[in-house]
Image 1: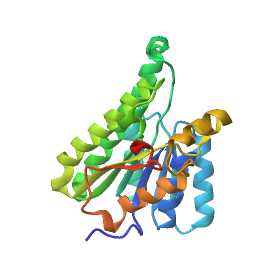
Image 2: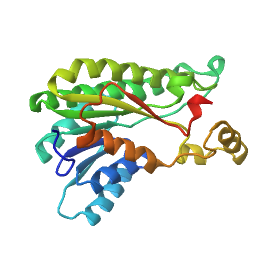
Image 3: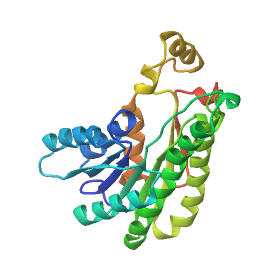
Image 4: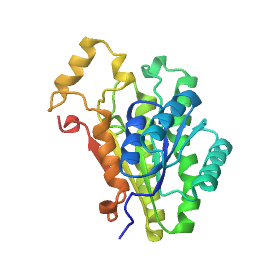
Length: 251
């Protein structure tokens, strides 16, 4: 049986706000020590300080890192192992959008999204898998998107990156299963984050009409699934993409 999440060490990328912050808080509530990663240090320092005040006997680390840069990722992973001893859970959550219709989309808009959402996933998974292979256990949880399953006009770059995340999840699950490492993905639908806050009320209402449950999801609802996949009851689940979308994909 996998050990409880209590005393485990987790890395969460894109942890300064939204879904990533909710995941970090949820894993910490279950007893984990968490290394928080984001492009800007200020945001994750705030989350780390919040966690330290709640759980003063545990350690919470904050790192500024461009996930698309393999060397930078390696420095973060080595630092976490040095400071906290090992890595039990990796949550690949870092992601960006650069929306545009295909004929208007620039090469830079395409490259930026692929570099962060897909190459960043590769970089962190590769660096952490090396550590997990030594321990012969671990959980890698990738935050994908319902857009990677059904597409969305104006998001060819984002949909392609998240479709790639899904395929990467299936493949890595096969590669690591014999070493006791599970690899799964969580596919949020439309969630209440800074991205959706920037939408007009009319646009939000139009999206909600497409969702059978009739509302946007909450970051905490994604965090609950991640905590389950990182916990002791999910040891026989690997290679799955779990939709958390209010039924959008069945609409």
